[in-house]
Image (cartoon, rainbow over all chains, first blue to last red; front, side, top):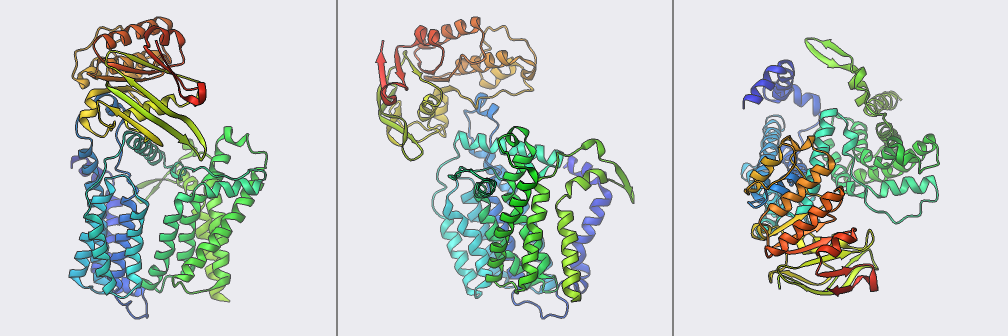
Length: 393
Length: 200
């Protein structure tokens, strides 16, 4: 609590600005509605859709099990007690944070989009929470990933299906909690946690790209190497599918927001993890020596492969209801792939050139920020250009 | 018998068996040495004995039960030194033994946080911890690694002492003098498709 107080004191302007933005829906609901919905009619069951999307993302993120870890030193020297208790405590903390976010979105959605069936909403939150609590403290099972997709699917289907989802989640949560995490899983979780901490401390998100899985492919050409690098990151596919489902829903909720922007941002988020192979080859000198191709050839080939993947992903969003604009969508896929490659090939961060600038009382490390936005900067610029061109012609 | 393996096999990939059809029994107060080249399955067999890895076929029991390190009572009976064993960098050797709840054994390690110890000293501390922790079964994965000549002699003495105290010891090693000094049974995972066993 004292640490939180200190943080508040250290970041008064950030807290003030962030608090003001987050409070906007509550004291300027009409303005927010005009900004995101405009003259369009209010989406039917808008807040329920927002709630389902928020719950789906929350359940999906909890099922990543970033709370399942144990310090190897503790496993070596102090491991005769109950291992489960600290994991459950961390899980409850993770659920509480997500519940706060979902609660905020529900309240803001209710004010801006109208209030949904409260009984159904509470039932959905409880069912999703209990399901996540029961499943996420135990070893993963592939079938559990159906839960977030069921939640999103319920927002497309008739409202009664949401009750069905409540029933399915509750039933899936009933079986015994099953086995505890094993030592190897706990150590793996610890290593991932250390990586997250280091990555957060140094602002280097590239360290968080998904680890590669084995791929049986002969690596006889640059194209095959790039394909193998993408295929090795197939663990990112479930999140790609979830984003493909969420993007059309966001467009339905906020019709004023141009679909190109949603496609661009969504596509970038989908493609960056798949560029992990390129990132490793370019950034790690020991790996680079195995690959005779030039860096330029690697970048171009990766951009080509990622564009193809991006187009397939865009086709999915269209299938799920995003309005079709083939030329814009194709160019957006290419732009997202290019931006992902730019992010993946970012040189190591140079902390010596952080260059802090006073921005209204808040010191912003502009030099650092410039390095960190490599990739998103291209995406933003490209989307602005595409938006201006296609809306003026 | 404290440890029983019956037809134990672990396959990696579609076709390659690390070992297969492994049968053996290990009594309390005796030592089994696992030998073989890198990748022959020594650490995998140790992981099976600790319940961290499921065998592809066959069974393994420790004190009549399938090993399962998720059970606290199992962990209280089995002490291990694996690749993932670690030290608290901020704690001294004495503090580590306090964590174990045992009397600090005689040692020549300096009273400094473990991150200030040399690699060999850190390894010695890990070994001290594995031996000091109360156990009926001791699993050691290449304990001789990073240990100097005098330390290897000390290590052999510690294994003998553990045996004398009634513990069963399974040791994976690349160091023949240590194996010769302490082992009562041997499994060479290179021989005869990885299933050769000899008893001294």
